[in-house]
Length: 355
Ligand SMILES: [Zn+2]
Ligand SMILES: [Zn+2]
Image (cartoon, rainbow, N blue to C red; front, top):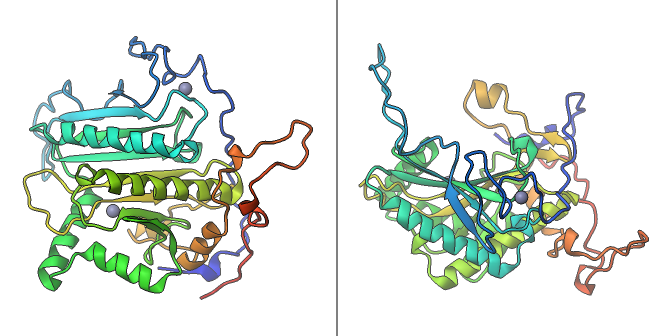
């Protein structure tokens, strides 16, 4: 449900504090920084690039306890086999994914390809979910930029639904559902955020959150490991550019939940599944959360208070250079910026209701 006419209704509820990005490149108290000791007692190496390790508090893992007695009634239970990993983007405590140079984003995606190949080959693993939670409003306590991998012995529900829908659409229409989504978005054009060769980003017609964004290769691949080096570089460019725009929108680290949606590896064919990245953004405005309430929690459907076309236009109007990369003169004088950014760095237009 889209109800963008409600976006300007008065709000007397709680607002959340502005997130401030860390300003130190190393924090002695951070369990993810190079050389520091984690709660497990293990010491991080003096890593210089991407660093992946098994999660010290895994939700699934080889040491999962036996579930014990079968539950009474219709319930089912099984061991939480699999592996949970943490992937630090770089040794820099203060550099988010949006602020990484292109070659480092490519390096990260290459590491995720390797992780996918290794983890999906494990016999107990039926799905590999890669995700980043960013920002205190989505519950992140450690600001050191990192993502997580859950290689589970079950398929997450959203992936299961996408796989079912993709297979059904292919069987009925003979076409890949996500290809039709891309074609529709490009034909309309208003929700496209950007493209680079074989990859593109858009706020989908069916966006549930304000600024919800999909980043995807144009070609259909079941998982990210199937992407060629060129496709991976294009995807990195579009992903990086999208995250820069989000940070620039309110000149603050933009909180999100980002998930890489890949086909299950449970033995099914999963034809028609198209690998993509979804970025779910909990803020409607600076400091104002989209609360999940009656329609979402109570009814299971989303009520989006914003028009996806308006949100895409706001993001497109932001500069493509990250605001923190702009040199600020210590006296507090105006920042230096590239000529191409002149006049583009402004507050998002105040749009009235459009529907
Ligand atoms: Zn750190
Ligand atoms: Zn998806």
